[in-house]
Amino acid sequence: MITPSGVQRQDEGRWTEHDVIHKKPVSQFKGPGLQKISFKLQLRADHNVSPASKLKTLRRMCESGAVFPLIIGGRPVSQNYWRLDSFSQDDNYYSPTGQLIQTNVSVSLTEYDDSNYIEEKTAIDKYGAIGNALAYFL
Image (cartoon, rainbow, N blue to C red; front, top):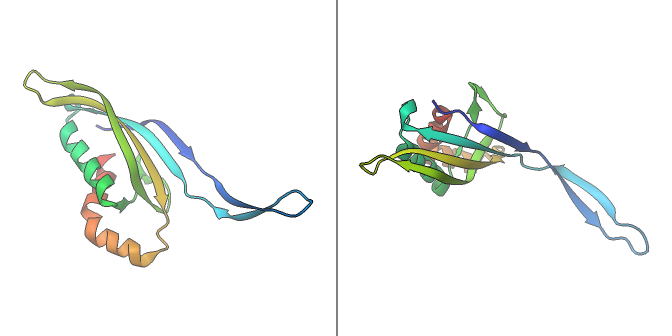
């Protein structure tokens, strides 16, 4: 059982300011920006989760540049894919034998615009199995 908590989502627009002599700058809307989402996960061995294994999966996703659908509660968060920008762990607890039995993970994701089909297709072919892991991860 892995449930995200403290979910924060950020949307933004892209703007450019053009300087005009003797007048205030003129603002121009360039389009929507990429959405960002962050949340915390508590990985606990007593919830039939291997914290070390899940951390290994997250590390591979982060370091490989995998893009993936983000599914929370059985539904996609958006139509677009996401990339794992960073994650950090803290509050690690170990068993007497040295196995990681609990950790808290903070995850930061950024939307990936999949309209760039050539790059997306390459990433899915190369990293699709890793990316699909996050869909089952949550």
